[in-house]
Length: 453
Ligand code: PLP
Image (tube, rainbow, N blue to C red; front, side, top):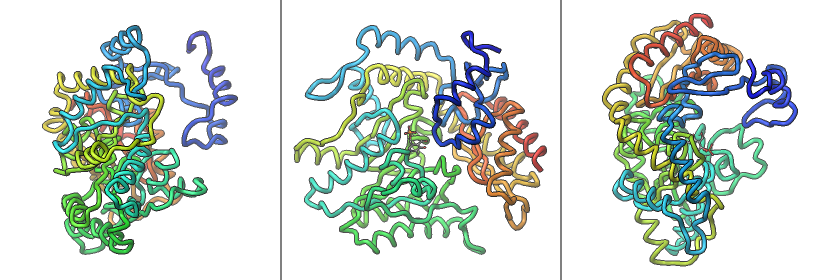
């Protein structure tokens, strides 16, 4: 198959010669060659060899409305013709970021009414880090600087994002991480729950690891706790029900800001606009990106709670921070149209009332009993499958994740894109998936598990 007069071999050769990929071992890539995705439609991506692959990852957790939406292309086209770019610096702005900010304030939890834009989740977490530290300085408590995060958290790949995140491999290559960030245990019951400990008690223990860190460093030194409501890139780790209420209580008790990273969970994935609503939380910041435009344009929005916003306005003084593309008019026009589609098609209600529960049930009934599956779990339309060699003891296969990679490759060959994180298979499909699409995906997962077992 050719793509605009280039053969796959030619494209792969140019890719190998000139293109460095994110999170990639380039020696491996050169040996294998890249899979070339050339088009997409609805829930399917198409590669250069003509295979239609069901996209179980919504791109990279972002294409919530699915592919091939003419309305989004049209919104971008019209905005580009009218005003392709102007910034929001120096007491200027343009209409679409304003309209989008108003819409986001309507959708967000009631104490969250302001928006600071960037182009990616990582940038937005940089903004969040600087903003919470600036807030405490404005409040006359500049020594409140420490951010508490969690091992396995993913908060992006900029220096601040990687420092906030809890991926040891990323820290290893970082040189000098941003100072003042500490990491505590995550609420990952499958590996960390002790024998005889209930889910409830484990959730409380994991939350209290945050309180212990606050007490160790002193509440007068701690600015905030940051967490993904469901840990995504770290392996769709879902906290027990007892965890988040306890985190909220601890933050309030010690006057620590609550920062949620909803780069994945934002815009419907857990069955509400934001997971803050799913878990009944009142965050001070919500980092969002990805599904804000369903990935059709790069755009992030840090949603800022009233307490911080009030301080910025009342105390005044410049916040020395921002990006050329903060509030990009085309990206914001696409976001507005994307949110309109999500609302009009009732995609969030569908996840909450129909496909989310059905996905959980199918994982539990059809996948969990498989001989090499230790656990399945899901929240809305994000799910995980733990791969084990021994179901009873939960012993893993040797080779640190090799089995999961093998299952992933079988699944892709069978027409389903999903990811392997360590020994965990993860899924995060577009919100347009129906019960029939879920059935098809589960058939393909089972086939891949059988081939690997
Ligand atoms: N935060 C979370 C929870 C993410 O999952 C990601 C990306 O996957 C990011 C931040 C970083 O976003 P970006 O890749 O757009 O910089």
